[in-house]
Length: 279
Ligand code: GUN
Image (cartoon, rainbow, N blue to C red; front, side, top):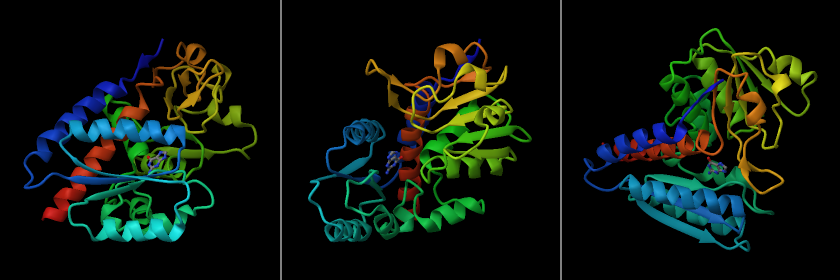
């Protein structure tokens, strides 16, 4: 039976460290959160983040914009936030509602305020191993692996999903720790054959029961990044937890695994941004 990785407990530790550092600064670190439209999942994420930054002694600059917001209005807001010296980090909650285009918005955020690590400059830095900020979800996964002394070097790490938010940066961070990395996606052939080779399997697909017990090697480490709702409306990940847990050596629960760590790393990135701005 697998050990359950307690992301909630580790996140509490990280946030306490961040809070202890934040009070030493001459002013509160500030985060602007821009939420456009009414996406219910985004509203839940943002509410969670708001609780975290109060806990970490940070100042919030919340922007709730209507679905009617134009691309130009959004870019103008980003320009204002870039110029505001009290705003250390800018987070534009994704996905943006149609017809807004995400790419120009991400590109407009000043790289030194890009606490998500989505800007091409920061993604490039990450890829060559000189990160300014580490992307929140993948960095949270790496910290959980470290906390539980799970080795990555030389291990076959299989990442399911190739998104810019999780799959690609996850593969970068695993590779930096000398993992042997395979990225699988919707066009991958013989998926189960590949996942069965995984020593560490990270699933970031967003579909219930993507990872079933027959796809998992005995003793594998299972990291479930997804946040889905099952047929009964209950929060769950990609992994068939009840049947996979007995086969795995370590497994992250949903909720209580990757989610809290993502938010804790975000807090740390805001602190880093503030420290850099106050230098
Ligand atoms: N949407 C889903 N996850 C994230 C995230 O980590 N950051 C932002 N900005 N949007 C998201």
